[in-house]
Length: 283
Image 1 (cartoon, one colour):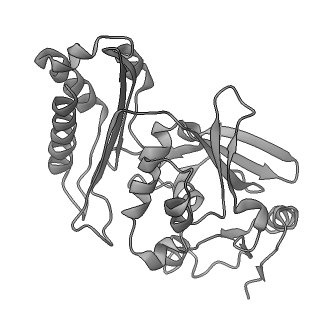
Image 2 (spheres, one colour; image 1 turned 180 degrees about the vertical axis):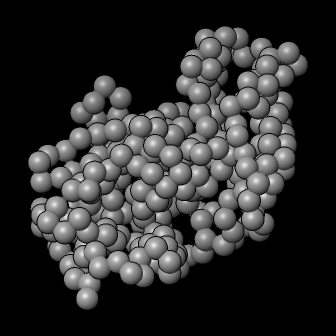
């Protein structure tokens, strides 16, 4: 027999989770699928998180050197899409997940904790330097998302911890690209995705970021390479040599695989072609 709890206070949820090493259930849209095989024989207690008001908010935090948008673990994808403060690239990614009924249940933090290489929200979160807040009865800690997700389906969340929020930066881009490749536009798992943004002022590249999803064990981003472009004249993006250099660099960073959704060859070609098309459009 499985014990089920639905606390209304975060403190109680943390206490229950620490005692029972519970299965945490927010929207449940990933757990319900996994439960068909993974949890059938489990007698772990289940702690529902969907009635805790403390983790349902979206607010701007101006107390840090760089303002960050803080999104509670109980916020659904629909609430992200309809909130005025949420960046457009987050909304674009959320709109392409499944159908309205699922988006009314699924949470952003659930997408993070599932840690699938094909998770639709992760490329945007990596690009926006997301930080994950983990809470336990002993206190709180924060991890950058690239630290938190350690591999496919793997995170650094400890058994007595609950992810209570995610925060992200709010950079301004002159131009950005988000493209998800799937079998169809709705209710389709991602074959690959690309998200890129650039800001140019007075002919100088002020910001340039790029992430790929579903073509490696985790989201592909290389901040060091991005920093090498920042400060250069935007005219370099019009040079075939520069475009080829960028394409070649990322071709060595991605590691797509063959699976039931697509082939490694298709993923590689499609990802690099989308990148080239975007570079040529901004150059």
